[in-house]
Image (cartoon, rainbow, N blue to C red; front, side, top):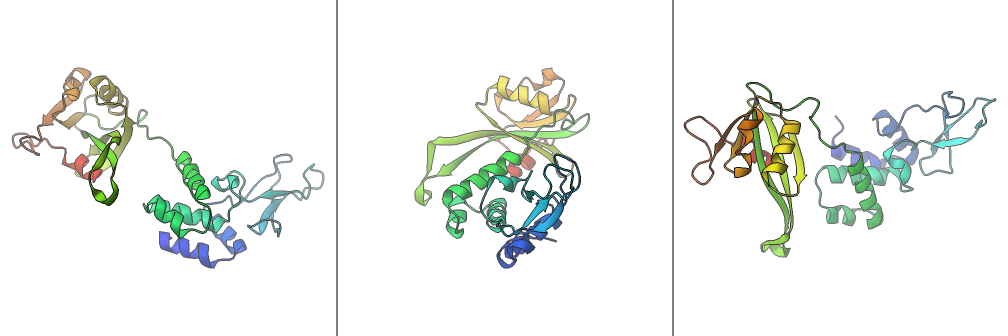
Length: 252
């Protein structure tokens, strides 16, 4: 199994050419490429003029791109960068293991701007969550919903900036454990905002458990079975078992 530590060590220890092969073997780069003109398979050849030390080359004699080179980074996240593959992958590994941005910048020899661009390109590749074609929940299925606020602590952990916050709506499908999750940023916690998102992502006739926020009060009128628990008095409704503990644990 390729752990983050294993991949990062490979990026450090392997030569540029060996790292290129490693990327192809692990799906980071395409392991075959076809000519855009003649549609013949390109040949993978050594190429010293590129940092990757490999390139694709069309060897079809009647093609207008005969013997011309194509970067192995074509049609990948890497094709917009001149930085070495090893540096880019290490940034991605560090970011995916939740290292803070300042820590990633300090541990890399590339420029801070490059680090930011790599992370931005990675985020752009991540598809937005959408269960509208296969909605969460369904008859007899429990869905827990809660809002949460993310913000950044002041220096030395002395409180928080009140203006530096972002609200999120979290919807989890629960069947003895969390099975699927939908999270999205919300501009406000008004009923018209939350209900619209819920109807788009949660199947009708689902059992929905929430806290006592009044924005959820109309869910029953949208063909949902809604129950709530008031956290001011309890975290689990002892009469019917309603709780939001699974979605709360997901926040943490």
